[in-house]
Length: 167
Image: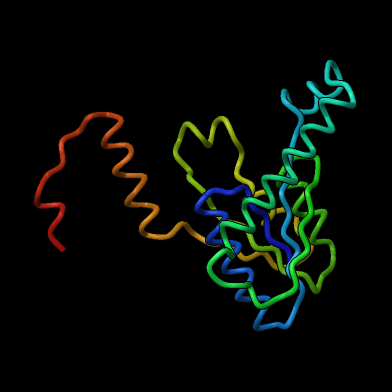
């Protein structure tokens, strides 16, 4: 079982779902965090030395530790965890990590606001199109959707209608 994480609420939901699926299947859970050098691969080739890349790798490892600590601080996952940081694009890194046909790849959908779609391609769509194993896509929780709506409302300074608070 392979799950991709970034530390967002959506990826934490995917991590918990993957842990539940791994418990049911009595499988090891490989938690993958993909990272790229600043400026993408072009930045890595043109200006970053080995020291800067080592710092990026160390930061990715630390981020993965933080994600796992945040996700499982209250209760242990109940499965064997293996953390993996991979340099590369998230979709390609996850598909590569879940090569076996017996694997299941779990990803979160994240926010798909129109501007984000233009700037950042969907990792879930990439995985669905390229993975050799089944892919489980975990949608954002309803609470996350409401939080995002409130954030947008605050950003645009739209007043809250009291009728929206009623069930």
